[in-house]
Each structure stands twice: as C-alpha cells, then as structure tokens.
Length: 300
Image 1 (cartoon, rainbow, N blue to C red):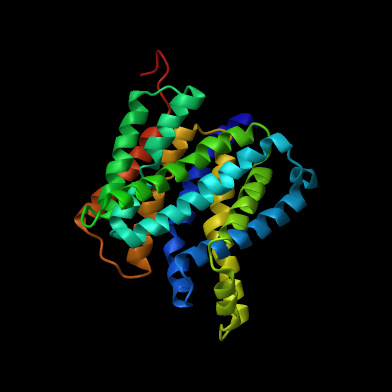
Image 2: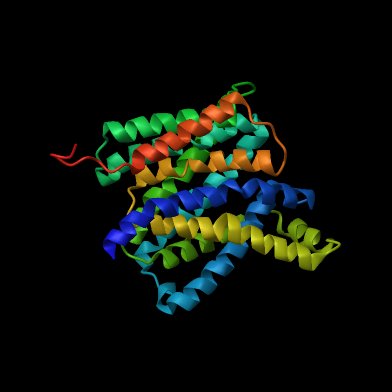
C-alpha cells in the first residue's frame, strides 16, 4: 500500500498542476459576468469550502475536530497561503505585465526548496537543482520574457505571491503529519473563505448575482469553477504531499503554466511561439528528471 502511494504521489501533483492550468477558462468567463478578480477568488474558495466540508462529512465526520493548538497552523494555510498568494498574484497582475507576474509567482519552487532545507532538513542534490533550473527557465519562456513597468512595490507583491504559493507545501506537509488530507483542505479553505469575504465587497458581489440574467447557470458555473480549479487540484496536491517531498512537489506543479499555455492555444486560439515551445520542453524535462529512479549500485 505504501509503495502504491509513493508511486502515485507524483502523478497526483502533476494532475493538480493540470487542473490549475485550466483556470484561465473559468476566470475569463466569470470576468465577463462582471466579477472582479478578488470577487472571483471569494466565490471560488467559498464554494470550494462547501464541497470540501461535504466530502469530509462523507469520509470522516471526526475530521471536523482539530486541536486548538493547531489553529495557528490552519490560519497560516488559509490566510498566509491560499488567500495571501491569490490576492498578491491578482494585485501583481494589475501592476505589471501578466507574463512578469506569472514568472514571479513561479519563483515558488525556489522558496519551497529553501524552506524545505531550513525546516525539514531536506538535502539538496544535483538532480533537484537541475530540475529547478529547468522548470524556472521553462516558466520564464512560457510566460514570456518581460521586465517592463516593474516597480519595487510590484516586485515585492509578485514575490509575495510566490512565497505564499510555496507556503502551502511547507505548512501542508506539517498538517498532514497530524490530520487527513480531507481535514487539511476543509479547514484551510474555511479560513481562506472567511478572509475573502472581508475584502471582496460583499454587497457588490451579491448584487451581481441578483442582477444575473440566468442565475441557475451562473451558480452552476461557479460551482464548476470551484470543483475544477480548487477542490480537485488542491485535494490531489495535498494527497500527493503525503509521499512527495515539498521541494519536489513544487517543481512538479510547474506543469501548470505549460497546461495554461496549451489551453490558450486550443481554447482561445493564442499563438504558440518558439520560446513558449522551448519552455514547454524544459518543464517536461524537469518533470522527467525528478521522476527518474536513481540507479542503485551495480545497476548498469
């Protein structure tokens, strides 16, 4: 059983990245309904919380109980990671080119690796460093090379998104030592949802639902957004963290911009440039390097 978990762990991380990569489809559609980026975040995490709680109710009702001493841990996951990195990322998008904001977000594997060495005493090796370099270079090429219009404030906010994104792997690894993945995701999103309602202009958000010409369809699409871009990927990622090192997971998840690029090409007819194609190959190379089994002594 343990061997099966270890073999499927990397696949779960990659699956999460693939689902996150489809986010552009849903965000663009909800933007067309008039919702702001922060409101979309609020809708997404609130509905995801409801789905996570239903799932936990089915899997293990006792999972709703957590020790009071662990409240700061889940506050960190909900506020410090999910909500913080999302708000930072969307803020960065308004302050600089989208490509630059995406590059700064995907500094997350670097922060994960540094925090893993500091807190978990993970060992750095040549294979991890090579995969990290290839993944980051691939993200730069896929997102586009741009440095125009970047201020110091924008740079700090963009780096904040990468740190917050990476923090989920670190705090999630700690939480999984004490709780099931279902408990971790449910409580994390519960805090994230509570925080999101403080910043989304609730009255305006509700009024946009009330003014929707086809409310049932809008509610269905919002639920689908939460399921595809939050519930499935975050649960997959958290399940994968049980057997995959945080630093390795951060690099494997860089398939997200790869998938986002493919979605742009296939769904929105965006062109595939030579640099984007090269970036895709670099990211795939990083994933392959991380998933190669090291040779044992005496093996040819």
